[in-house]
Amino acid sequence: MGKVAVMGSGSWGTAFAAMCADAGEPTVLWARRDTVAARITDEHRNEDYLPGIDLPPSLTATVDPQEALADADVVVLAVPSVGIADQLADWGAHIGHDATLASLIKGVDVATMRFGSQVISDTLDCDPDRVVVVSGPNLAKECAQRQPAATVAACPDAGRAERVQAAVMAPYFRVYTNPDKAGVEVAGAVKNVIALAAGMAHGMGYGDNTMAAVITRGLAEMARLGVRLGGEAMTFAGLAGVGDLVATCTSPKSRNRTVGERLGRGEKLDEIIASMNMVAEGVKSSQAILALAEQAGVEMPIAQGVVAVCHGGASPEDLVGALLSRSAKPEVYGM
Image 1 (cartoon, rainbow, N blue to C red):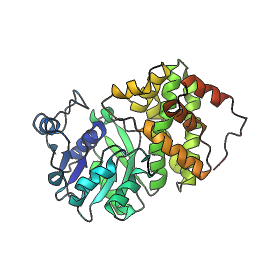
Image 2 (tube, rainbow, N blue to C red):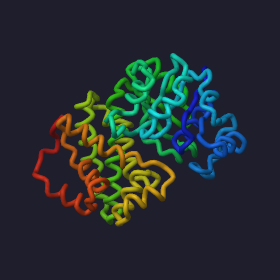
Image 3 (cartoon, one colour):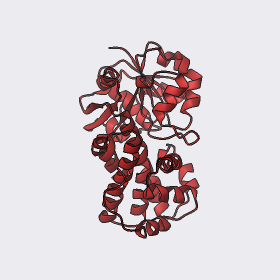
């Protein structure tokens, strides 16, 4: 057993670090602010992101990245996709030369259209198979409350996937390995975009039939893009695909669904974002995902509608009208 360094003390980073500690791993959490790090270490709380939840007494935090990374054989990247390259440029040199890198990033870099694992391996100039993608229906608050849940650790290098599996497999958190990193990573990014649409539908007052249609047609878009980008079709029927999609589209704890719901009620995107202390990855990633789909010749009408609402001045009502007026199609195509 080595040491786990979790870089990022937001809700999911903190919950993940807590699960590693509960799994028996020596775990250090890196935070940007002294007050956050001190309270995690001394009071076992992160009130900014997981208020009211007790963290494991063995979990410590620091604002010194070099201290967090020292002797870590697993380094967990738990920062938003926006800015990850800058963060790695600051402290990436302190990462051990053979440490396994675990990406919790569920987004796409807008400027370069690269997924999180690609940004990590490119910035660190390391073998892409050192990066394990972790993704699944893992709402941070429920995981931190130690409610039963499951996830996927995806990497072609089975040994590295199994190391991450062991690091975070707490008594209440089951981890499955999967060699299909491409499929798992596409699923984790696309589900946020579909959740924005699901939230809009709920905010406009539509019911369960509409929600089921958004989720299932969103799954079709996710699978079409994922297969075209090298993923396996069965991945999208698993935890990282339909599992995460259902959780993110239906839970009020989901940031992306919440943003969509408020858009559906008529609020302005800038005001919504300004009122939140957490990042809704789907808002920024939607443009890059749609661009990737267009490059690959993949139809993603829900994603296209989300981009139109979030970045093109369209209304949620316009999105509904555009989707319902599309020409008739077979249910399965483009795979």
